[in-house]
Length: 137
Image (cartoon, rainbow, N blue to C red; front, side, top):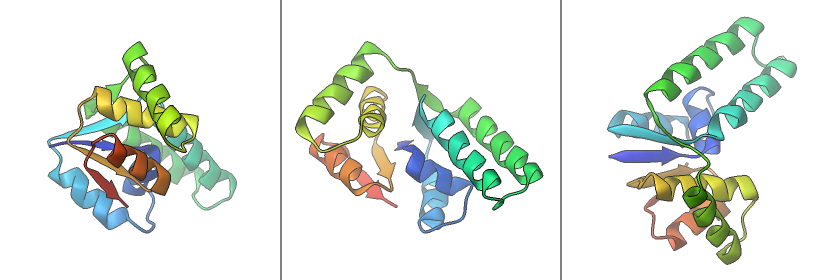
């Protein structure tokens, strides 16, 4: 099963918070992890914030980053193509979404994900309206 994770969901793979157990179970169930190309800088940004706030040490930051980079190497990562942008624009025109959330949604559609996973309520509603199967974590 091709499972698409937006950044808000995939970060739970590395940082324990509500939804982490469900994300880990979905990752185990997936035959292919799918991500948008914007997920990497968004998740690294979250790791940097944790380090700035001294919630993780510099060593822990490097470990988190290394795990993420290893996972990304094995994932299907969508580039910012005209087709992804077309899906994103349609999503923005029909839903209340932020731009980056729409890009994740466009990426999931372009990758033909079997399941869309997010922690964002509006993004999940937009994904369902786009006929994607959705799990909110």
